[in-house]
Length: 251
Image (tube, rainbow, N blue to C red; front, side, top):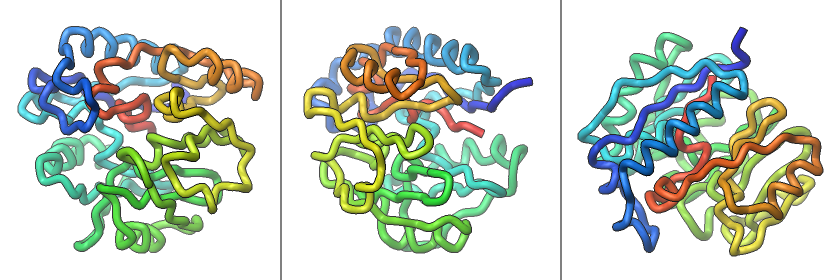
């Protein structure tokens, strides 16, 4: 029996046009991205997942970043009202697949939300207030769950989960230079330096932590907490302002 289901979508031919502020965004190489994506899918399977490949959306540059389209709650799925108009069709394209698993709901205007700004923990959901997600979304989300909702200001970068990952228990990986850590001080934190910032986004699947390759110091600290690390080459997705969690929706 599979431990989880992961929805993924491979990068399309327009992937090099993905929304990005990365300085190397113009050097995105599609063939390399496709190889890296296949290794990512393999890692999901090795971690015990059933992988569902969503139909390609070749005309949508950012469609491989499926995490942003929805937030998986205990008894429902929230379809995200994305701020970027160029990405809203992604939500429409994934909705039929998600409705096969749970009831789907959405938020009314003026709420805007990207799934990458939602960090779910056992009793609290932290919501990044960022370029893509506003306080109205955090307030509306509080009506859909019994968990406490705590906003966290994102001061640098795209999303909350670009700078923080909840591992398990009371463990957190964090880049404190990119978010307001005032409401996160109670966690046992693995703090990453500015040069390691990209490693703050990891995907936790049971005892396995999928993380970007090239950060041995961070990997060692994660393993010291009792986890197994799986390092993945993510260069082309990093150029597109994407990270490890961005490439899947975990059910």
